[in-house]
Image (tube, rainbow, N blue to C red; front, side, top):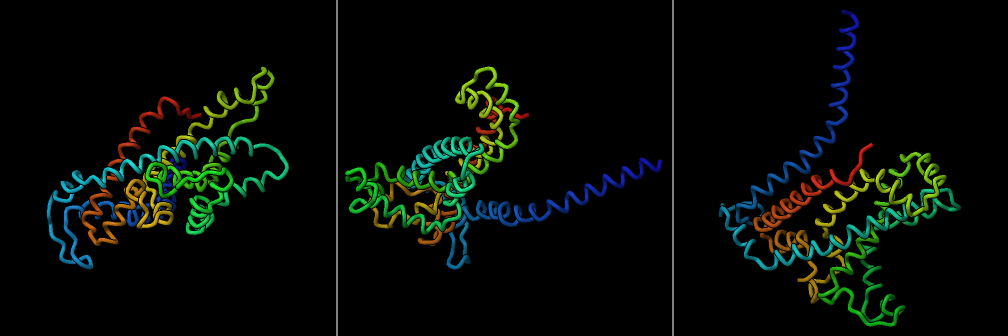
Length: 297
């Protein structure tokens, strides 16, 4: 009986301490994420008054207006264009860099630091540098290649130019996550494959990618969500008078314009609800699809 009681006490202590450790995180999620989501959904049914007072309930009017608003659907298209470019390229390049830097070589720590530096740089500084690089008159890119391209003022390519900045900014973060995953893969697999005559490329696709698939899946989920929420790069790179703004502004940028520039927080909340719905659908699809290509050890 004494053994059973001791075991029960230990389980109770583990239960209590476990909840104590996760309580701060749960509190943060509830206060900073879950409650604001419900407040946003609630506010989407109102026409917001000045200073958050005098809200008028208008039912589904904001949603009816949104579904008929061409600017909203153009923003959805712009956001998907950005994500379709930024997500796969940032993941693929980061994965290759992680594999190359996951070996013994001179100055490997310096290389890892250099690639991670964009993550710690101020977004405003990043925007200033890339605006100079993309400048159509005296920008470095046009000067180096002897061309004249309006990188961020041409409606046809501006969103892709901003996606390039996004790729450059996030590569270091993705690379660190992949490096952490690569550390968990036993070297025995590679040694056995080398003995069998497998080339480096064959080892990459038959050993590295399958065993790293849980990490790849996690990075993909987070990057898709991050890509669909893009705002800061567009806000800092694109001027309000830029002719390409209509073909570049994202869903979050449109939310910002309606909520804080035009002071129409009810309609802005409706746009955010649309974004939440899109992210939920895309995430559910990814969760279902991962069963076919993610291999958990």
